[in-house]
Image (tube, rainbow, N blue to C red):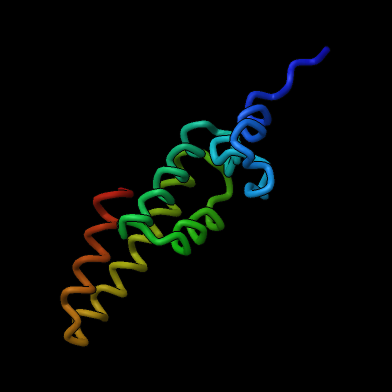
Length: 112
């Protein structure tokens, strides 16, 4: 007799099958085959809960990456940093200094 998947066992035990519609635990979802790139993307997405990243910007960066290698990572995040830098400069010139500095500092500290 085949052993049942441990995740399936847990869901049955906790009666979660009727509440969990994706069918997968978050750690089973893969954005990239490259383990480190996948882990970093999940980490950065997790920071959005604390206002330290923006999920839309993360997905935009993912769309810019042609592969999961380091060069594409640096180019995609560098491109995002440049866009945020321009937006921060525009906010500053419009007198919105707090929003300009907060957004740019968050991204530079977390991603570059």
